[in-house]
Length: 515
Ligand code: HEM
Image (cartoon, rainbow, N blue to C red):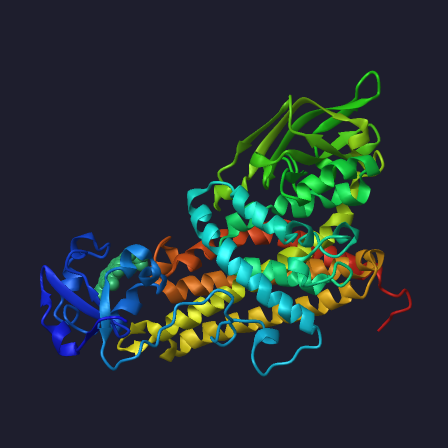
């Protein structure tokens, strides 16, 4: 039972060296903390703060997580008798009650044709896991830039999280998913969407990629095009988080232009090995990968080869604008060798191997992008309600409300289009998806990330200086604004994708369609 105080008792502690305050009906003794306060002593000694109820002033300047930190939590010495705390710290797994902070299918009273009872149970379990285990590590690693902990990798393995992130398919056969919550044959793209969206809530873009997204794009070529022997060796150890894999296609010489790649693979004299020479750039998870799914120029064109870390393979980190925890690498292959049996698909058939991967990769990015921008909407709705300017909350200004309207509309339209495409994916064969959805997914990705960029700009305007400050109230806004470019480039730049979508559409134009 907390010690009880009255406002009168608190008011007596209002002098330098003896400062108590009330925040949300909780009494804090700041006497010894005052000189350590990052905001300085003077603000605490203000006559409207020292000995007073400082709730409004506190929440205008600090995120509520400040009070959850153990070093600050222990400043609380009691509560105000007869008063109730109203501000609740988020509980792991909880659904936000802020309007538009959740997609409609998670909001009380709304309906959806897409999600089953099983999806709903699955979402609860995934959110709980993300909030308890991924979110806290994401916040630390995004800042310190170190790679994902093996402890977290292992926790994810125990739920077969790594396997589920590759989507539905044969690789799930025989696995216990999420402690048996969903049967492998029932796992569909909506389950996968849930995983992608729940992880995106962490608001840590670099760590999000460090969370083995190299595997999401690097392993499918092995799964779909590797020999049985290669698959038997590589797939289980990657899905169990014992080894790491990445996709190594882009180069300093060529990004979207796959045919312009310069890394070469030639056969050894005895014909048993590939000898690989060249460089790769911006390779996610490359710094800690054991396997590299490498796009190479070969005699017959373009070929994809699985290369193991070893002699002739060097990786070094590239400093990008997001966290080094993503393991973004510059890779050099200097007479690196790989057995011919590591060829993925046909020699010269690399384009086919790559193209079969792109739709899924882009759709995964749409899931994250839609959810990440919604999290920014929630931040802006909260901030504009609690921040006062000219004596009124920010949201009393029409210009702020107009920005919120635009953000909300963007988040809702992206999610709704995404759910429609996901439903099509659930009801089409992989081949049908390749034919019918490449354009749709390309358009959605470009739309979603351009919406994200506009939302990032609007959010910075709403948060002001805090929107460009890495700590404190605007830290998620600063982070989102700094890293939205990754969504807009990875998996295809916006302009390239829009053009691809239109070209796909033009191919489907009936010859007899005339005005
Ligand atoms: C339990 C009491 C308090 C604790 C534990 C605390 C802690 C902190 C911390 C950790 C920061 C760094 C920024 C951040 O991480 O958000 C900070 C900044 C600040 N604090 Fe406090 N604080 C307390 C009460 C207050 C009060 C009552 C005021 C009164 C106005 C105040 C004014 C400020 C200011 C002006 C800043 C700088 C904000 C900025 O740079 O945007 N603090 N405080």
